[in-house]
Length: 178
Image (cartoon, rainbow, N blue to C red; front, side, top):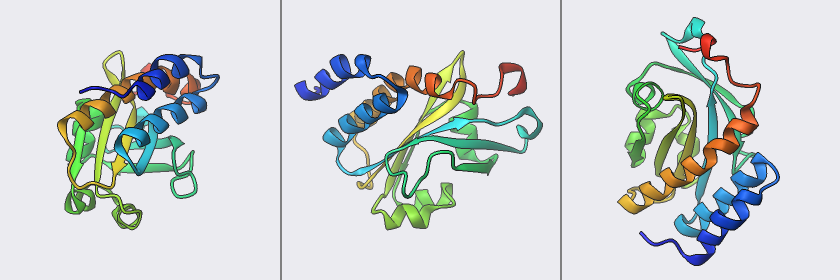
């Protein structure tokens, strides 16, 4: 996969000079849009406290490319499903393609569909081998190409230090998490 020079310049020159996590995530979103087209990017913190960790997970939205629809600080509790086990427990990328999969995984699938979005890639952001957040890209396509999945994974890795900076103080302490 080759990245266009403008995308490389944004990632190599602009991203390290970002003055805040919000500015850095906006740069990553601009690169994502330039290369993949319309869609949605959100970052959710895993704020699951130990007391509910065996029954559910709790996520809090840290950043959104469409805050008017998916506002920052929005929270959701999700039961322990195959999606939760894969993404948050085993720390594996989840690729969901097509409306049926989105309906199976997300309670807000009708809203997702109304935005013209038909697929998702959720990338776990890891610190010391545990998922502290998820980098979530929804797209208008119903199927992702392998190089698109790898691009989103790369953007997620580049987002991780910025997410940690933004989340400082918001994440439960290690001994408070599973």
